[in-house]
Picture (tube, rainbow, N blue to C red):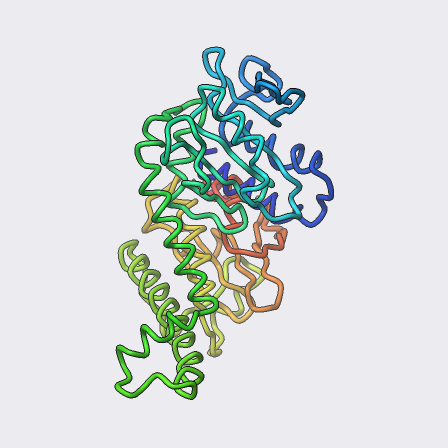
Length: 360
């Protein structure tokens, strides 16, 4: 699997198991050690690569341990401190990391609960860990723009100098993105007043503030939805598909062939098109993009090879409250896999590619 696919697979595991984790040790076993091994590529059972319960001389402070130290050439390069997954992360949790950072040669420190990963370095003062992370990775909401930076810390591509050279920009861009996201979720008075002043000439009274609070929030959400829709339409045009079929047809296998002749009203949703693009991106590793097509039906949305309903790659059952990804074996027997978020489709990448290869 490619680096991004491995990260997606672990993110799916985190989403599925997070509520079942009740201790710090369970967090380490379920989420942290798999991240070190499958994502970063270090052997957690090799003390030359990963040292659990890492200790260093701290003057009068003795007996303290860091959960993991990733070693290279006999020196600690990355320090990792773990907390229980059902609790949030605060800088107060990083007190041991802060002390150890100053007495080792490490340039990267990580504070994690297995769900959130906060990456620190020493931008503000040499050999002194910053109080704010330069990169925050949320396994429940992966930011694809951060994946190349995480990969630079992997055993295969270790390039800490490159990470640190980009750390200042990452730190402030990430902080700005999180602040913008927070404003979109729950706009502050300053945010509301800023936009209101651009479109309303009157005084910003209490009545006006109350009126525009809802309007600013509504406009922000509509803007985001329109941007997503535009990107999907563009992706479909570039890949050779139709931007938005007016009367999409139907399904993918013999059991649904009757739908081909039915004059029914079928609504293709934005979510189905986004799911189709994910399946298509995975399948394009085996064939050229124009060969991956889609048909919609009342019961499900089908992804096909060569626009042939006898060559189903996957089915998207997105019409109910619970979404399912349908995958068919060589006998056209379908197995449905429940998914919460669309990016969980990546966890089934191998099965999707296998389906494409089957028709080659």
